[in-house]
Amino acid sequence: MKHETTSLPESIASVEQLETLLSQPTDSVVDMFRRISGDVIVLGVGGKMGPTLARMVRRSTDAAGVKRRVIGVSRFGSGPLKAQLEAHGISTIACDLLDQEQLNSLPDVPNVIYMAALKFGSTGNEARTWAMNSYLPGMVSQKYRRSRIVAFSTGNVYGLAPVAQGGSLETDTPNPIGEYAISCLGRERIFEHFSRTLNIPMSFIRLNYATEMRYGVIVDMAQRVASGEPIDLTMGNCNAIWQADANAQSLLTLEAARTPPFVLNVTGPEILSVRRVALQIGALLGREVRFSGTEAPTSAVSNAQLSHRLYGYPRVSIEQVIRWTADWVRRGGENIGKPTHFEARDGKY
Image (cartoon, rainbow, N blue to C red; front, side, top):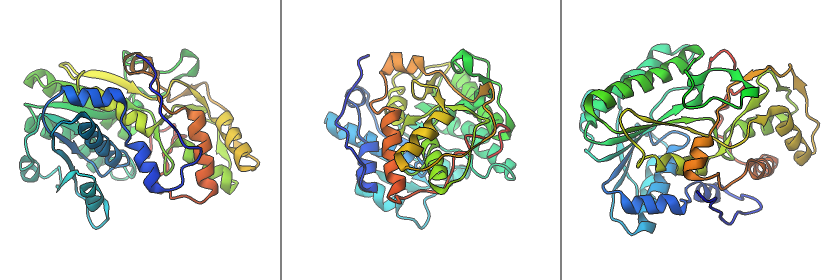
């Protein structure tokens, strides 16, 4: 598939401009939403990726000239997200998905994007982690047994692999480390069980890692360089992909959903050197970069050649993301305060 290009700014000046970029659909996504029918519900829309993914669905649908409801489901709360989504034409429903009665009351729709999960704070809160990541998929499968489901997972299910082999492939045997990653494999296994027994078409998105200006591995490194903190090199390599590209590739798997589930690694084409990225950021910020530790021969890295063959390369290069991020951090741009802990090798988050 050809690489889709788009006009990119030299600098991202505001959160509004950022979220517009993050929700910009590709031509392929617009074409897909012209072909498929029915409403779309995003379960767990309140996470880091959910709001811009839901907006991408809305913008794609509008560009395709199709009438469709886009529904975002989250517990919401007192923040502005509910009103912000509704201002962009996304219907919202406040729901505790673990409450069976509330889940059953959700509308039946043919297209389900499952983004509900628990990662940050999972250490010390293991029971809820398992409930969210492994028990809830069974509840959702029963509720949406007549739908197709795109379920977000994580590259953490692979565990650590030799960097020299080029990253884990979808066909590799999972080897998760720590309760969070093991519970995520549990999520996939429970979904797969119901996909097979109830004939539910599904796709699994093994993501590694989506990044934008307010969070992500590039942001983590930029903030440490800016503050003079050392960069831990033990996890010497990582993956990253611009969040808009992750949104687009993930949505395209609605048409690929099948039983047993279609599995796709979603990340950038490079295995990034943490040392090299940190030095690039340091040069852009005019700061000396401090390091600790030594690169291990294994890292949590994935190989996304299948996604690039099917859906094309990301529209935004990591080099561009690095320049945008350094500029954003230099100007004191907003940060959501949730570091990825990409350097963790023990699976504790």
